[in-house]
Image (cartoon, rainbow, N blue to C red; front, side, top):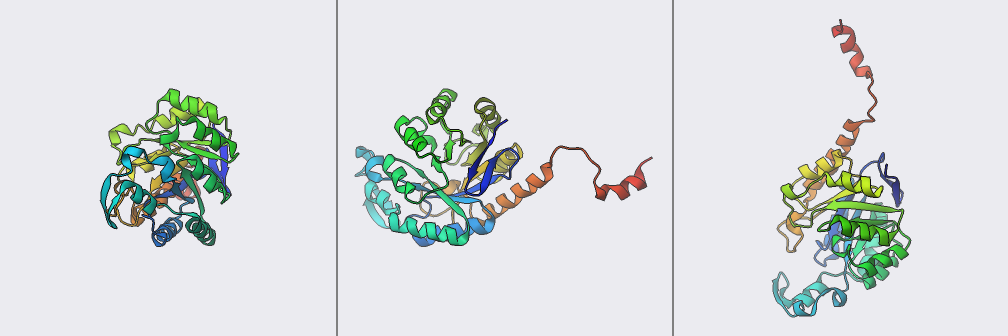
Amino acid sequence: MAGHVTIGDKKVGTGFPCFIVGEIGINHNGDLSVAKRLIDVAQSAGCDAVKFQKRNPEACVPQHQREIRLDTPWGMMTYMEYRYKVEFGFEEYQEIDRYCKERNITWFASSWDADSLAFMEQFDPPCHKIASAFLTDRDLLERHRDTGRPLIMSTGMSTMDEIRAAVRVLNERELVLLHCNSSYPASEEEINLRVMATLEREFGVPVGYSGHERGLQVSLAAATLGACMIERHITLDRTMWGSDQAASLEPQGLYRLVRDIRLIEKALGDGVKRVYPSEEPVRKKLRR
């Protein structure tokens, strides 16, 4: 049976409440006030953490994409200009760090390159997230491993052999694997939630689910099947500009997700068959 990982003051693993992450990612569109509103939404919904994405555009944007012209809400600009437009720097993340502490919610990020990982280390995060895209990036995996922090790794668009190789590189006891389909939005026919059990059997680490589907049903099913962590993108409005918005949950959807996961946890119980006090009057009345 998989053990547990400690993230902040919460234990993540079998036997502990599902750790719910509201992924802000870049759905803030470079606007700190939007990021704060999303933090407020996640905190009031009862999420355990919010997650951002950090990139160094110079390291992440291929040369052939840099001069592509985009029609954005801020006017026509190159793709490289857009990437810088939606990136937060030190001052913004310093304020995010302060604000999350004020709101008593954990935050961390997925770093898309070595510079971004070093940048995030300045904030003493409780963990790091490795996105599916970098599961085969040995150098970046090693750099994550060497931080000594708990790690969360998504496994979308990956073969079992690729996951095995990544886990060997990480050689990390404090590791959570997230089953994931990397389509945006993901089709229910391709989500295959039973892979969670496959990952837990093989690797013996806590396993959760990172969802990119529309709606709540699949994520609720993942929680019912024992996902130790549920991660969903969140947004103020799915019609906002951005590649992740359509597969994100709006505030009311996030509220319902957290509420229903907590109800499911109560209903699942501990597996011990017993007669409850509420049943005693019925038992006396109806039993022969």
